[in-house]
Image (cartoon, rainbow, N blue to C red; front, side, top):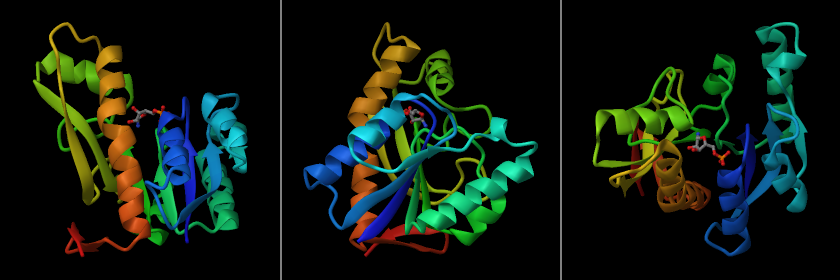
Length: 207
Ligand code: GRF
C-alpha cells in the first residue's frame, strides 16, 4: 500500500481528485496518510477533514527564516513517513535536501505542457495568462517527478487541452483542471502505486 503525503496551498481540487479516485477505485494500492498546507483556512484543509485525513499547516511565515521552515517541513514529512509526496498546487519551494532524499518519490502537477510556460514565475493563473498571451492553440497539464530544478524533473504524463476563442485565464484554467489535471494526476499515482513506471537515465519508462 503506497502511503501518500499531499502538499497543498489553496483550493485543493487536485487533492479532491485523488481522494475521489481512491474512493472509486481509479487509484488502487494507495492511501493518503497526511496533508500539509502552507496556508491556514484554505478549502484543501476542509477537503482533508471531510475525508478524515490528518492535515496540518506549516507556513514559512511562522518561522524566523527559511532554514527553520525547512527543518519543520522535513520533520513533518519524516513523521508521516510517506512512500510518495504529491505536490498538488503547492506554491512553496521545497528544501533541496528533501528533494535529494526523496529522489523520484516526489511528483508535481503543473498546468502546462512542459517545457512550455514553466519555471520560475510560472504558477497558477499566470501560466494560463502567458499561454493566452502567446496565442497557443493547445495547452494542457504535466505530471513530473521533482528534481533540483523548477519543473525540470522526469515527465510522467501529459494531457493536451484545446484553447478556445474568447478564453479568459480563469476559463482556461478550469478546462485544464477538469480535462487534464484531475485525470493525469490520479492516473500517475495509480501507475506508481502499482509498479507500472520507473525512471531510467532520467526518463520515465513504463514497465
Ligand atoms: C492547479 O492549477 C495546479 O495545476 C497548480 O495550482 C493549481 C492548484 O489547484 N499547480 P488546486 O489547489 O489543486 O485546486
